[in-house]
Amino acid sequence: MAPTLKVEAIPTVKAAKRGVVTVVVKASLPSGYHANTNKPTEAYLIPMTLKWTPGPLEMTAVEYPKGTLEKYSFSDKPLSVVTGEFSIATKFKVAASTGSGPAAQNGILRYQACDNKSCYPPKNVPVSFTVSVE
Figure 1 (cartoon, helix red, strand yellow):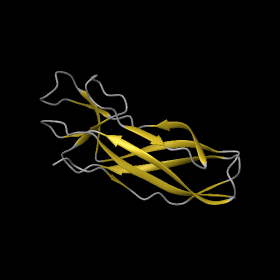
Figure 2 (cartoon, one colour):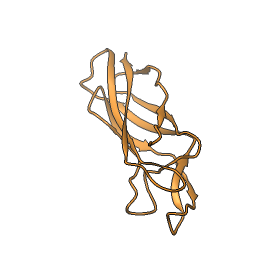
Figure 3 (cartoon, rainbow, N blue to C red):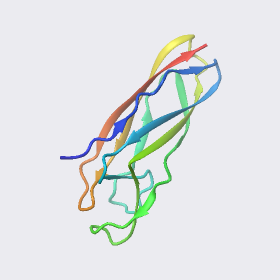
Figure 4 (cartoon, helix red, strand yellow):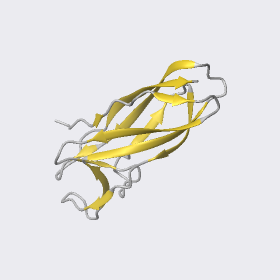
């Protein structure tokens, strides 16, 4: 059975109108598993992606974890992977049209988990937080 990536709840984000905020998604994989980074070293591997749906905030940049190069029996060359706990930071700007008060910002974190023998089908994990515009 494929391992599930756990994502910590994101605390409410306070933002000023036309302001800029950084939101950190903290995630973890069970011991013995890894996930491809956003820049896998092999074309057949599925990259980690974090996509945000349009909402009160507009994404300006996503910073993925650097990852480490690990050698596995199923690949001829080392793979760029994350293991254990890692974070993905997203920079947002507050949309000019956003009104005051709380609003939801939603996204999807897509990843492919593997163990030291094989990879599992990719999974999507919903990610969301509340932003309070002041």
